[in-house]
Amino acid sequence: MSTIKKVEVGNKISAKVANQLHTLPWDNNEHACGDEKYLVFSDCEGKLVGVSLIRFLDKQTLYIGKFEVKRKYRGFGCGREMFDWITTNYPTKRVMLTHMDPTDDDGASYEFWKHMGFKRVDQIKHRMVKKIK
Image (tube, one colour):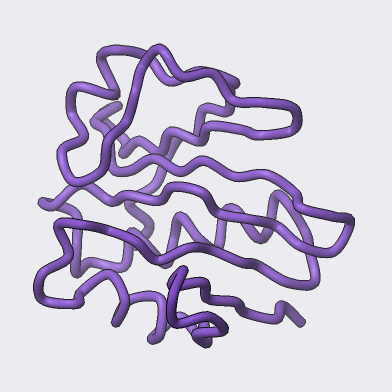
């Protein structure tokens, strides 16, 4: 059953949303630049499930700059739902991200992206990439 019921797309993240996110430094004064988009994912009751910041690097590559699922929704497929929504609504041939979550002591974030089919392409900057069919 799908948890994600609503997605808001914008060029700024609200203070209300930013204050609910704890694992990454979300700045509610930060504006998306150019074609960057903030995506705010909510459940059927309007409760925040997760947030992402995306932009196209070129016509074939979508970059996920930030991606966070609230802790209480982790392990239930919400990250996959968010990713699937992004790749359905922003079709591309390749998705790239930088895996650098300073609070990821147990490697859960890296393991999530690896499970999603991403491959590490750079050890120093922790870049990962996935080709989309």
